[in-house]
Figure 1 (cartoon, rainbow, N blue to C red):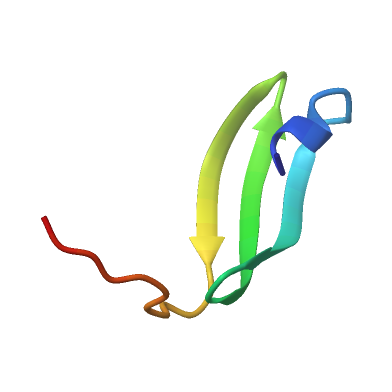
Figure 2 (cartoon, one colour; figure 1 turned 30 degrees about the horizontal axis):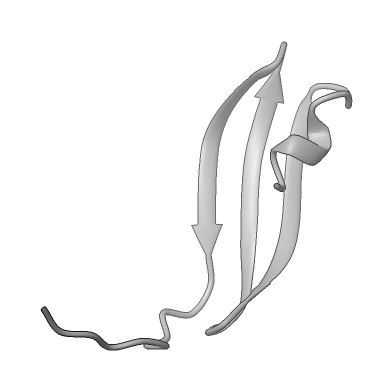
Length: 53
């Protein structure tokens, strides 16, 4: 959804903070002529689920 919010915006570097189950994460990326690159997800790695098959 962070990328979708910039669809009609200008080219540039964007940074968004999102709330996940494990805490706040940061999504950053660059947009050039409707092409997205350097997409990064940053933040703490926290175990929020455990499952078995």
